[in-house]
Image 1 (cartoon, rainbow, N blue to C red):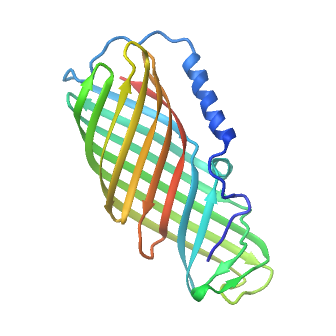
Image 2 (image 1 turned 60 degrees about the vertical axis):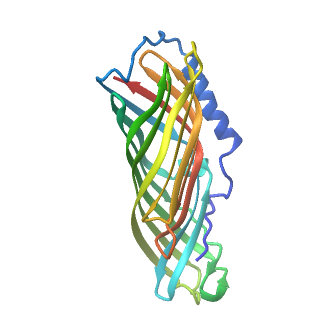
Image 3 (image 1 turned 45 degrees about the vertical axis):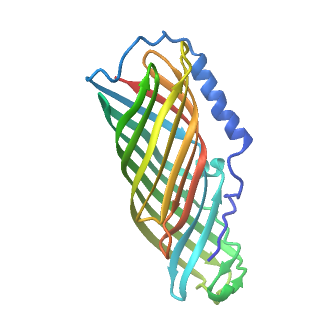
Length: 284
């Protein structure tokens, strides 16, 4: 079943959303703060950091649901603005614990989305059969959780520049629900109904992360990349941006892309999240 939501357009991140994230970053950077004192995170003592962030991600994906007459797919495309309007609850945070050359890094994302104004524009069944329904009411919901945890080892570090290699795992969990009521019955779907399915996918990942610091300044370029497989045929993630250091931590603005391709007939057939992320890191 191919559905598109009236409140969810196929646009990616808009210029306005990018400008808003950049404006917030500049405001945080220009806020007067004392300079960061010299510290060595590789001195053998424990060092910790916590980074809450806001990811203004656009969203695109294909979800599979079961109906009495067979499987159907829902194609969803949403801009960052659409997701913010549909967001009922969300948590996004990164954390790291370092002891000398070794470290543990984790990233947690949880979001609950609900759209009461979904518009079912077409229904596609086996053999490409298409029907155009008249929607009286429809509602789509999505709960998703993404958890990444890795163990890392320092490959290079000098002053504030650093490079770590890591291995770890990423979990993706999703619950997709669709409710519909049409003006009349269809051949492919009943006049009204509800469908709900969930998925739990674990993947092994490898990658690298670090930063390139501009000597003598608080500015640096953070970067991250990973790739993996397991429950998915392929999953990968990449991000890079700009960072400004304070005495208490850092403020960063990055562009992030996360891709899942589970493959086969699963609840999630493919999923991509991409957009700017604004984070504030606290070190202690």
